Image (cartoon, rainbow, N blue to C red; front, side):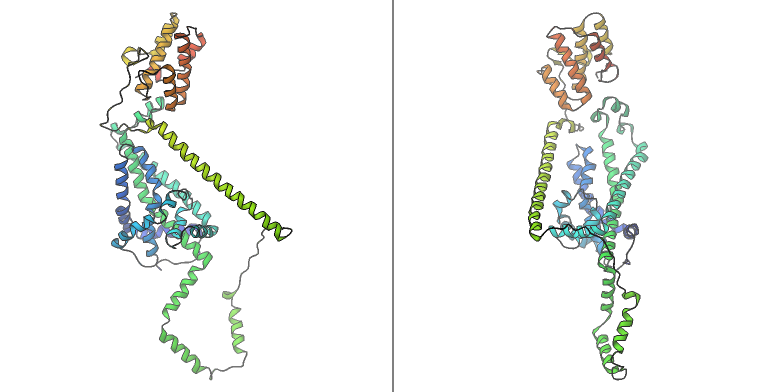
Length: 473
């Protein structure tokens, strides 16, 4: 062993794990570069049109990255540092072991690095892994949770700090239009792709620097847990003692014992007295702890047996409900992403720009056909008694902004109802609520030839959400 095994306080064990990583940090970084960096390159190539999602994918695959550092640290703790070739050969097997559980139902475990050694080093599968982790978590689960919480906050703060510290080095073309984003909530058009790529790279750098320490801390907690509940340090001490006893030494000791027995013969009870004296030593004292546990009383065994099936049925129903809810959430997410896929489509360089319609329902909605201040022009038309022209300006200006800035997929053949459906599907609640109110007023004046009140017109002008002072561009 290259580390001293003894019962430690949890945070002392975490410090031990970080010290193990610092000792071999150079080798761990070399292994990280050979195993993790190629995967990140593939992710970046596959998602080059969607850089905003790269940090999420990098974060989700963390359970895979942790396995090679754990492979190295677990062997280095026992004095055997695996070489590059050995690690490279073990790399595919390490990543494929428990691949799906690690990325699906165990991904959100708050004791991930603490439980990883039990999954990877003990050779257990299925329910045996679950029982083993549950046993270890009775002693170290709380510490593993606290450690994961602390490392997640450290990683987040370091990521924000790195981006904040290097923001001034970005060219002007790569910085977002913060004011425009706050006014229009148009993240797609106000955040450049270069800024998203820079954030993804900063995230990869922070994960590279912090994740090995998270793995080392979890491994040290695992060692400390086994030392506390299994006496692993005592077991290893006995093994070291046994390895030093050769066959010749053992035979010599036995021969000496038999030869010296006639000389050192003592009364019959001397051996018993010696044993009793040794057992009275404090090292052989048996410590007992009394605990209270509530145990339900049943009238007889038959009643107990009758209640167990009910508990099993409740467990089955609960499991069915869990999977039903999970499948429902996944189905809802898929439907939501399909319906709103236009929101997640990146405007990559070189792509053909989406051509917005110039005329909808016979109305010209180009920016050139509208006044600079649409709201002011609508107020003037209303004051002159032309309600249809006033509402037409607001309606055309809204459509112009929605198809050019929001990229709402409205076509030139759509009706008022079709336009409203597309705007609601775009997901911007404030704009959708306003456009619904405006559509109702426009249809009332244009088709039903019914007037709208002065209060309603003032409300439509005052609540205009499409950029300050009615700028439809």
